[in-house]
Image (tube, rainbow, N blue to C red; front, side):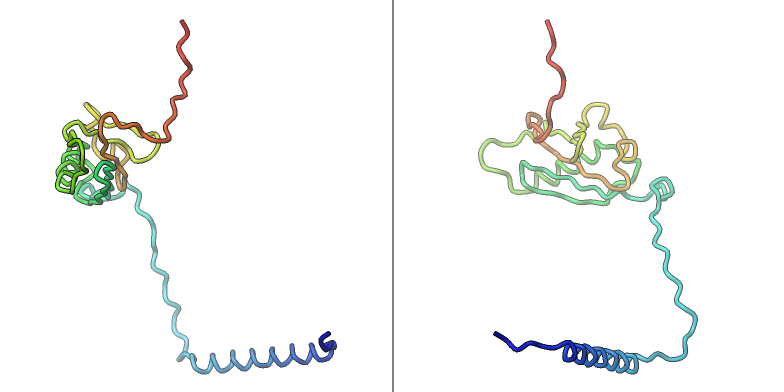
Length: 164
């Protein structure tokens, strides 16, 4: 088999390694020696501003996805008071300019605007009159523009069957 290394040899190796590390540390400190120590730099505060404390003309960051054309847009063109109907119209115009899927033409006026995450809230009718802030989409939000008949994947109907 191999030669056995005794405790004394291992201790000597360990001491040599420690001496090398100390010498490396000393050389590093000499190379990076700084002048006389001045006042420590003050850290820059990085506090997050609450939506209510933001100026009234602050813009929301919205992401709108459209699975029918396999596209996504991100915009900061809407202020907190902008109605969802404006966002829907903007998204419709943007997605209609994208290459369309082959097959049946899409029913753009019938497209629905929904939240891009649970509870998958559908915004139609009076809900399109809500502001971004009222809909909870300020300062950021994600929406999905889908065909009216599209089922949202992952949503399960947990209602009990009606009894006769």
